[in-house]
Amino acid sequence: MTSEEVRKNVEKALDEIRPFLQSDGGDISLISIDDDISVKVKLEGNCIGCSVNQMTLKSGVEMTIKKYVPQIEEVVNLS
Image (cartoon, rainbow, N blue to C red; front, side):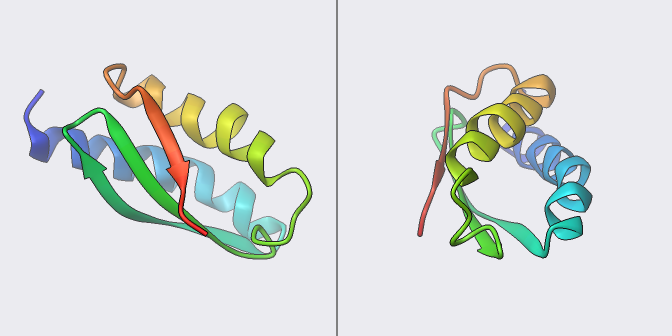
């Protein structure tokens, strides 16, 4: 998968999870993809102070991204 395909598929994954975050007053932005294996995102809105945002990041966001791009090893939230 090329870097462009990785980015496109990560964006698709974020588009899939975004409505769930927005329904709770939050959102997510893609910051960068490093070496096609590490994704940096920024949780926004109500997601910032939410006590379960790490669970959301790992169980929701990371799992969805890996479904589209299996080579991704980690998803990191930049606060």
